[in-house]
Image (tube, rainbow, N blue to C red; front, side, top):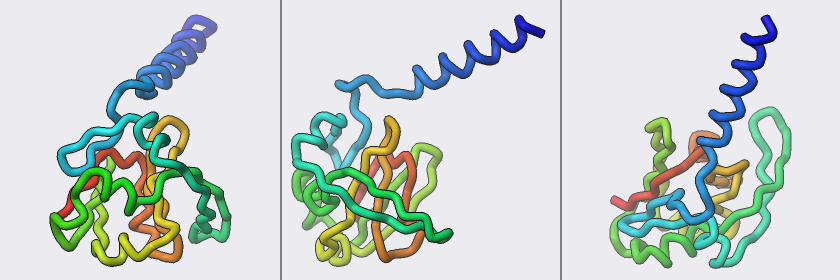
Length: 135
């Protein structure tokens, strides 16, 4: 029993370690440009409160989504922004809404990224976002 428990704990620790991207490894692709967390943080961060469907409010730190799109040079590439999660989940939003949103961010979330789009559908709050494309 002790060996099984030790094995399970070791497996969980190894899974957590392998899931964390090293600081220099790309964690987000926007258009053709790859970003590390350091790259994103260098753009300047801000805090945004998001209240989920259960009424719980969480403060997230991240980079303004419009700034990320501008830095990647994709603002004029299309009218729809598509967020893709590591599990393949996709959500999209109109480019003009993204550019007009003063508190829509790509947030740092326990070693991964997520979109925080306050006052919009919960479907746009994409956890573990790894790619943003423009169509």
